[in-house]
Length: 386
Ligand SMILES: Cc1ncc(COP(=O)(O)O)c(C=O)c1O
Image (tube, rainbow, N blue to C red; front, side, top):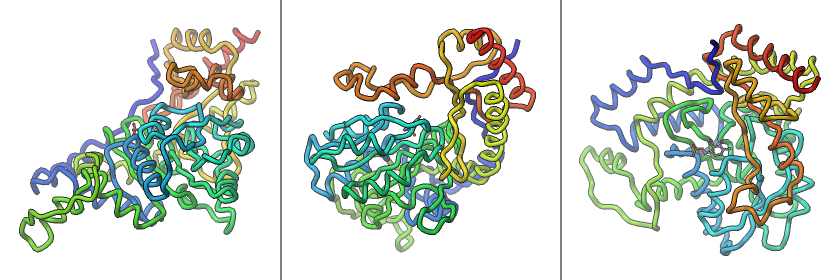
């Protein structure tokens, strides 16, 4: 019996262990050392001006809202336009800072639709949280223009977007996502494209915010222990406290995993795109609706490959009985009790969220596995649709 799972992370064990071994020999597993190295490598890869390695995307989103709220003097209850079609972390981060999520609807790319965003803007709106579902940019360029017009900040939840390149509308060139927003936050959680166990990267456009986020992710302390140790060769114990910070920084063990993950990111994403091209070509030939990428998404990280089906429960049940175990990204968040008051405000998100299936997509899939998944999806679709 086949057993084809949605996600299985691929770890280059020997290479990761070499980096971890250096940490153990040096006696340095925490913040600093390998975290400095991954930040430098990430900046080189993306050409983003700033990058701070943190313990998760969730923590990074929280810090993004905290810093932007304090710096721009937003008040409790000010509004952030966001999507109901996302992992709960995105909208939790808004709530952590006592801001109010205002749900706008998604487009065919499952990302925020600029027209729907515009209809939700009020005097209290301060920012847009854009989520690049599956690595897709959707209409991010239009959303950035809209934000400029209304003087709103843009926070990019780039959890799925390590290795997504977007068309810069000014130069026409391809660039890694994150350049034209106020802050982008990536996830390096275990099943993401750049897998560690848990970690991420927060990239502010503004240098002062980058300096601040380093302090706030280390309890508000102005100098980390690695810097204090390395200052003049001897350990300096003095430091200043600037705010009530959090313990959100990354460590050198996670950074070791991320360094190796980054080395193979392009190769792995290329394989993801190969699998997705095959899925997309054959499934669309068989009249199965797939979620495709926006034209500005020059290179997608292809974290997900999603299809839209009518009877999802039946479809998943039949796939499971054929040994294929797909996933669902995501349940309309307004279905959850805590957001129930907003239920019904985003009809597209609601309808599509009932129909989405994410097909298996990871480095462990063989070409035969991909053919088998396609064969099963086509077969089941015929059974259900007749
Ligand atoms: C869209 C989205 N945002 C945020 C997160 C949170 O990422 P992390 O697990 O690194 O906190 C995830 C993780 O699944 C996600 O898919």
